[in-house]
Amino acid sequence: MTTDRWDVVVVGAGPAGGMAAWTAAAAGLRTLLLEEHPEPGAPPHCTGKLSIHAFADLSLPASFARNTLRAARICAPSGVVAEIRRSRADSHVVDRDAFDRWLTERAVEAGAVFVGGARAKAASWDRGLMRVDADRGRSSMALRAAVVIDAEGPRAQFANASGIEPRRHLLAGLQYEMEGLDLVDDDGAEVYAGRTWAPGFFAWLMPLGGGAARIGLAVDPREATGPPVQYLDRLIAAHPIASRRACGGRVVRKLAGSIPLLTGDRPAFRPGFLLAGDAAGHVKATSGGGIYYALLGGRVAAETAARAIGGDKGAWRDYERRWRRQFGREVRFTARVRRALASMTDEDMNRFVGTVAGDDRLRRAIERHGDTQYQSRLFNPVLGASLARAARDRAFAGTATRLIGAMIRTYVSD
Ligand SMILES: Cc1cc2nc3c(=O)[nH]c(=O)nc-3n(C[C@H](O)[C@H](O)[C@H](O)COP(=O)(O)OP(=O)(O)OC[C@H]3O[C@@H](n4cnc5c(N)ncnc54)[C@H](O)[C@@H]3O)c2cc1C
Image (cartoon, rainbow, N blue to C red; front, side, top):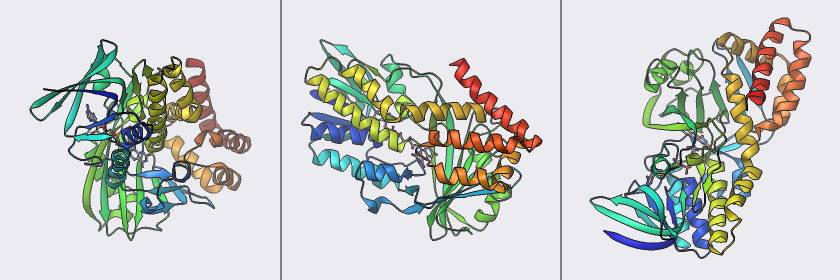
């Protein structure tokens, strides 16, 4: 049995935990970073698409950008395609194993202690400190800390065992990294929409350059009739667009993981215990993207820990205020859009994508205001262009009315 006392124990060495440990250690806090796997970042599960804002705001090294994306092709279930091309870069694609490892190395350089192969089981109050019980191989660890930062990712088992039940619903994701593909370009991601292909979410192709790409999907287990592998293999074999790209390609690795969708708006803290990243459900529910919010949330959590340890009693509540100010609007907005999208049939999706493809005003509105990091900025311009279109197109008016109605219902029901 190992017993140890720390200022901060961080659970999980993903983007949230790595950034939290780095920030806490740099602030002079005695910081322990626990990771259930021997190494941070392995095995990777994620596509690695990260907004250019994250690189600028957090001074991330440009060398992590394996590829740069400027365009997106939205493919309706029927195979109709709408291409959105921005004049500026939107995102870079990173390799998560290298990225997560780098963050942990920065944390260790700043003074944090990293312990791999250690699985935190639960935390509880014990004589004015948090007690964290963890297993490492056959030995047990009983750690004491002023603050626990839970950055365990989507499953939230540690949070549940610690008496915190974040409200979320998990989607099942799977992707193949493939080489030898027949791609249109290197800077355009593809999104394959429709219940037929990925019930409850969507499928994607993220180019890596040189004919390589990550092609994957997530499905809602409540709607899917089989595991994600069944849908991904079918997408690659039979989707009107994806099969053309992937036919003849070879799978070089497989990556799987869950995407948490928030189903309630609960605080991400208890005094002494802060949730960050996927553990808090901080993702864009439209795309499942959560790396940037994990980095921001991890940093704010560590700053909160420093203030709380310094005696600031308002620090815990301020954590909630700060993450909400930084990205809460996008988390809430994308959750509403996801719920509205759930009301769309494949027929609606065909009509919507077909309209965007053929309507210059609507497409230009998306190109001008679209930013995958700040999706709420699209709402007013797209609403305006959609209403103008609906006034002269009865078929589209039906789809637009259903979508807008579903969006309004999310405001009424909250
Ligand atoms: C298929 C797929 C594709 C995705 N693509 C993108 C994308 O392109 N862009 C994007 O922004 N987001 C994407 N995401 C989401 C993104 O991966 C997450 O939002 C991000 O990883 C969240 O970071 P995190 O640090 O909160 O959690 P994680 O990255 O999940 O890290 C949590 C870490 O904690 C460890 N851990 C868990 N429990 C314990 C425990 N009890 N004790 C010790 N260690 C523990 C885990 O092993 C893991 O290393 C994708 C997700 C999936 C599933």
